[in-house]
Length: 236
Ligand SMILES: [Zn+2]
Image (cartoon, rainbow, N blue to C red; front, side, top):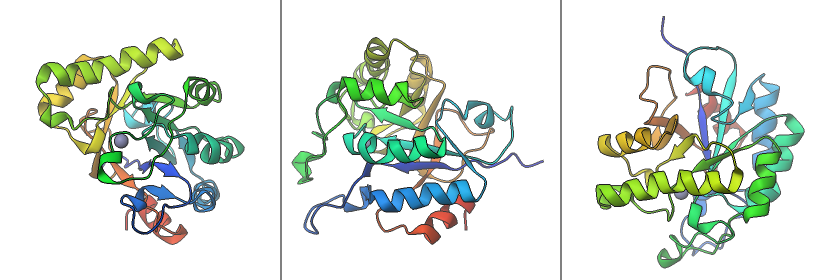
């Protein structure tokens, strides 16, 4: 039997888009649009889950209508605009935090002309976790890992786990490669660091037969209306 396919949605910023002359506008999903998408999940009988809560499904030990909700970069606007929606619907989600930018911003994108987007500070991160949502890791400095030496990649990957665990006081078991930069060696480093799963920017549905350190996702962009969202949920 073909193993069940699980959509892992990728979001970044839940906010109004920056002006037209700014880059990365597709990474901003309007809060109303996000709320509608989550309501569609609920209406269609799906349970929205964090990577941690979806683990038995991702490992093929449990089956059901689940959709995984992930956010990259730990933005404050997710705390402000997405968390109330998730809480209202009884969904959980994962946010992948950049350990050296807690209370900081998207410093890695500023040289490319991006608007500044604030990251959650320590209190907000802890409140995110207290609401049942997951703190995932996204390196120390949001570097492109394939360009780093193996030692530096290990420091960035394992170091973000240690740093976030020191803040939360609980295990951080999920990782996401910044800029989608990954490969066989980096997957090994993520595994050795003690993570359970790692997600990529490859497009597709996750299956229990997949490499747990190279899970594909469904990217939701600014212009995805409810119809396009549902298409990405079902894969057509
Ligand atoms: Zn990122």
